[in-house]
Length: 70
Image 1 (cartoon, one colour):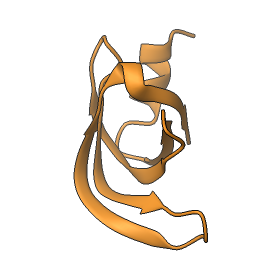
Image 2 (cartoon, one colour; image 1 turned 90 degrees about the horizontal axis):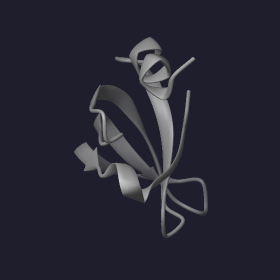
Image 3 (cartoon, rainbow, N blue to C red; image 1 turned 120 degrees about the vertical axis):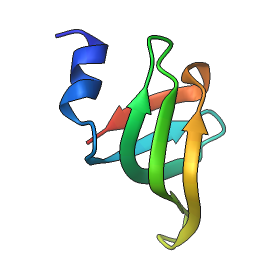
């Protein structure tokens, strides 16, 4: 299965995204493109102590994403 097919499977579902720098975000996968740029809605940053900080709609550049997990 190609990565784009996996993203299509989880479109409009909650996913977890970790980016370079060690930050982790959770939100609803709203869009993506062939460069693996990702748009999340209702995004929250998951902080080290387990708390969350709201971020709203967020765009992640594909080259900064380490992983995406459902």
